[in-house]
Image (cartoon, rainbow, N blue to C red; front, side, top):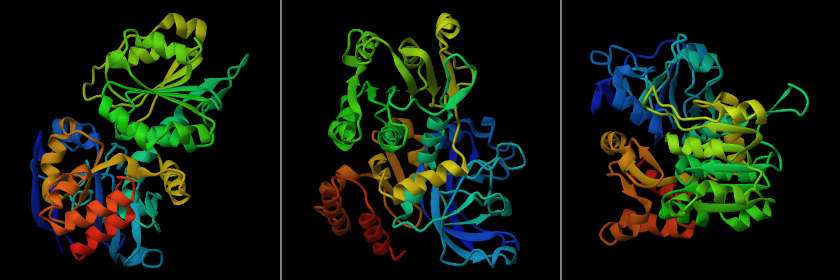
Length: 419
């Protein structure tokens, strides 16, 4: 079967290529990709090429398909899996498969397995090791966003604290504690706010900072102070660029005692150091944002490490259990990944979107590989609808869903293109 895919050939060398997929093996699955969410990690892979730890050295000769936050449906099943999986099944994939112990993963390492493609081949180890996740939800994009949500959930699970007067560790954020999410009004930050408000180990105080007033205003409109209060949380949004002394202001919000859990969502030394400065006794700083610079560093107060037991955690990606938790919470309506989405586009738009991702404002960019559409901000649907019936229809649906992408919008889009 022919596929069309965005492939990485070298540093910043992406192209949309059409090529023939090989026949599937007896232990493989042929699948149709419906959605892929563009991740900043993919931008980093495109920037670094073979210097990225998950990208093979021979991509100039054997290019790989990019995209790892994807969902789709099964087309054909190899003999070994026919009793378990069937054509028409919907699925998502946990990409953290660590292929051959090299950290290799879909979207980084495989010539026929990645999200920015019309059709792909899922290798045996995905099914064999439980990384294939069956999905029964009402929209493919939600399954795509289960992967970035799993990264957020993993970070919350990885933060830790020592019990008083013992060396025993308690995993997870402090229930009823004080939490800060720094540089937290981007797409992943929004997911973290949503999860913090609706998971079991809720903080009593949650402060979210950013330096962009528009991002903060959107965050506050979508994830409201009132909704947080209904969950027993005092939620505060703070633009640190407008503060003469942001550390002093943040400390005031914690009654001067600091924060039990601090999440840093930007690989910026000043933000890391701000997080360190506001840690409470036994406080944990979780460095969520992955830097592209392998020598990235920031100052950390080791006096507090010694006398106040402050410490650091970090995670890269999530595990299958984290994705399952994300899908379960979505199914129950506890979290809404739609708050992360700001743009929609087709496969041809994925090259420019990926290479320019840091310069494109807004949140998550959803790619639908089988449609023909330039990357378009959801906020621009109304204007484009003046001359385009599809955008006019989508704009009305978005209005009816509080300005958010939705299952209804996806259904209309896919139907329009006969998918």
